[in-house]
Image (cartoon, rainbow, N blue to C red; front, side, top):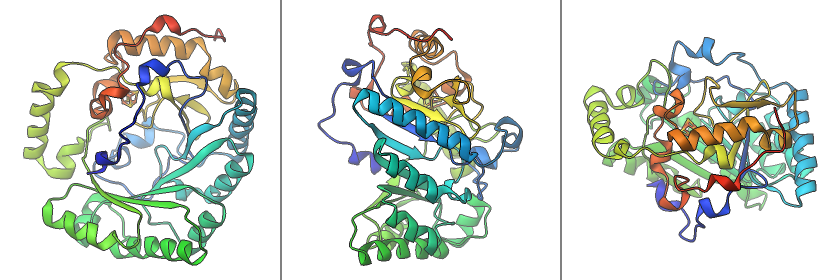
Length: 345
Ligand code: SF4
């Protein structure tokens, strides 16, 4: 399982907060996707209305975000640990994704750049550019190794063999050019022992890490993640187990303290699970990214997160992400007196 990949020597997060810079900044190249997966926001009829504007990020907004990051990281004398070019959509839908990777590399604002993709649009041309521009990490999510299952989940005409071939070429090209980057992670949600084994075998020679991930719930609108992926019985079983065990003790989420996401239209929120932008605390078109991180809006949001353990936010009430965290990453006992804000808005 992928959680075995967590490092063992983790620091206690609450002792390191507040952070001068977020650990992770996500920039959303697009909120469009070419798949309509049954367990995702995109497979939900409310998505088109709730997540609008549905479009690729305009280059001006991307450039402004990057300029802000450059000023901020230069001033702070440190870089963002991880910059993700990904949030709600399939990043390769944006035809300028590779230019974005190149621009972030050139500005040198992050220690690592990562993309998460469904792999269907990873053409040879794109693969070559990603290797040449120095992308650090690519995460490829596979939804089925059997054609019918894959079609049912993704509602797309891309087959498991198309995607396997795309990954194979990326790996081959990277090896041929002698580079170690991007590091290729491939994962699939648990599909039962024999399918899992077949999947691991299929990808073991063309990826650096192949893993089976556990599916988890979040608010994806009318869809129930578990129900659509595994069926009614498994969904009910999961709900019962969460209600009777894990949800008994509510947990605050670390994301408002460690992450920042710039959506396709410049809105700034905490995380990719918040597709309706409920946890919005800024806009890149109105303030710099540093001003947003040091704002009263974010201070208030953090305070609410801690005092209600996220229960005042609809997105967080349905989200299992904090319950998957390791104890070292808990913010429940955080001393909020250490926090303040610089900007009044
Ligand atoms: S609980 Fe989920 S929705 Fe809420 S901030 Fe954390 S990751 Fe985002």
